[in-house]
Image (cartoon, rainbow, N blue to C red; front, side, top):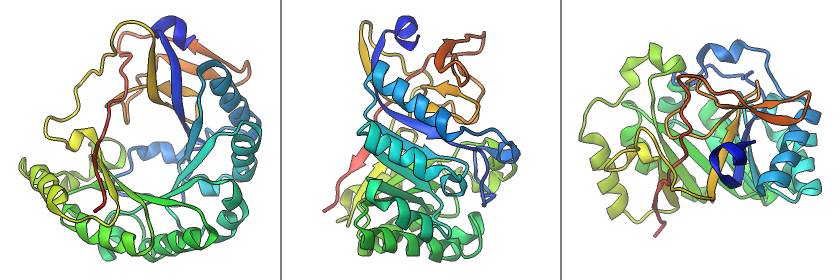
Amino acid sequence: MIGEVTGIRKIRMLYLQLLYRCNFTCLHCFHGKRLQYADAFTAEEAASLLSLMRDEYGTEAVTLLGGEPFVYRELPQVVRHAKQELGQRVEICTNGYRIERRLTEIAPHLDLLRVSLEGVGSTNDGIRKRGSYQSALSSLGLARDLGVPTGATMTVTSQNIGEVLPLTSILGQLGVRQLKLHHLRPVGNAADHPELLVTDTTAYGRLREELAKTRLPLEVIVDEDLSESGAPEICAPSDGPRDIDRIEADPRGALTMSCKAVGRDSHAFWYEKAANCIVHRPSATDELTLSVPDVVYARA
């Protein structure tokens, strides 16, 4: 269905939000009140979508998210299906809070564990949850010891923009390979915390300059919104058959291909769980927008 409407033939990665439920209520979370929703994939529905995406669009990798994926009871089944049955690359994005037992269980099937951090020490804990910083570092250390490659994410806010470089140093000491920096959008919980927004129009430029001139201990990938030109409002593909990097499925089955659709209900495609098929449901507000490349700062 996606191919017939858009001409897209290849989708490299599926970002699969397994559930909305989370054990955190982060100040900047784009899900906001949706964290209270019960929507979730069953293991069978998740496996069916993974198989469909591989068979129809050649999808070769999956990133499992939430909510918090480690509170999803059927996580091991989904991970094993993706890795053993489909041969896909499997990444999990987590808050890293008390995940040691389950991480040990799925480690043999995991290609990357990516942990979210919002700064160093109390800065992180003030945004996420008390005790979450040390727990996240502990999980990264355990993953390293289990032989699982690790990465991290950070949403840049007014409170942590000065801690990007100190965090890269700490993560580098733990063997973390990559840090992704994301732009904060005023949706979900962030809409209730405008103090987190970076209002200094020169701040991102200074951050980019610091990253460019510093000998980094890991690779830093910068969200296109933080780049010099910023992300375009609509990321139109060129005509003809095309490949895209990612598509995201939320716990309801809504599918998104976009630059700036975070927090919006702008989904032209839906995965019908019962029928195991993708349907097109356009509306007046839907925009078929595609993801754009990020900016990468390589390690020294």
